[in-house]
Length: 111
Image (cartoon, rainbow, N blue to C red; front, side, top):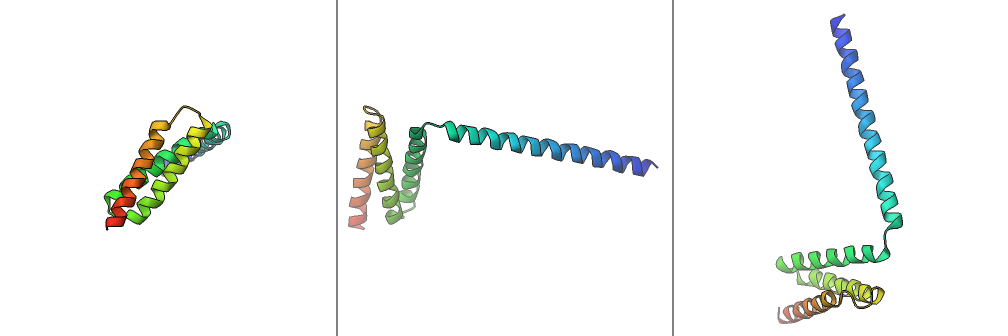
């Protein structure tokens, strides 16, 4: 009898834990959907530009210059789009991206 009671109690606890986790996953998915649907388009561009910058730097550090050049071009494109979308902003970031692209081009040319 005690074994059956313990098994039922354990089963109920596991079911409650599963239900709670499923509810939290649904809430997180809803929050993410709301966030992305109301997100300013320039926020997505900014995120992509920063990702391209990180990828460019990581690949260059690994000596993978061809791939780093692709990400450098992508970075310049994103920063350029941001400077056009937000006039007067992101100029320094765009200049940095252009400088890094030129540095990578010269390194790739000498390699």
